Image (spheres, rainbow, N blue to C red):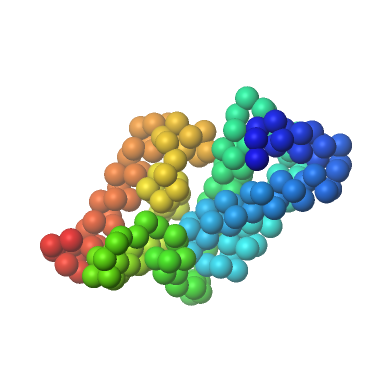
Length: 187
């Protein structure tokens, strides 16, 4: 979908055109769900946060400024919604989380069966260890290392300075690497 088409749908949505908004939802729902799932590691939570994100988008669409990419603005709302939820979940005792697999996270794969099996196991470990990071570290790690966003876009989404992003990313990677080394020092 082109930027002009997106802007046209936004303009129509601002005039309370529910059909136009449903087209935006259909276009961006996979992006929002994927980020929510990667941050929350729970399918039901991700579905709830996806729905909550689009409610927030509908209510605050008038705040969107076309000089920014719509996807960046949407990432920001999704990240903030999930970050708030992560902070709540962090304080809940006995929180139940569904385990996720490397295939759920849709990370890159390799060509040979042996490499694929080894990479899948490593990805599952990284995803498990990602779930143990602080909410801020997890958010930055997922946005940069899993979603592949640039630091400037992460800063626009999170409101963190480049130094804070770098610091949180460093701590996240260090934590994951430490836990991987505890399992296998050769990793």
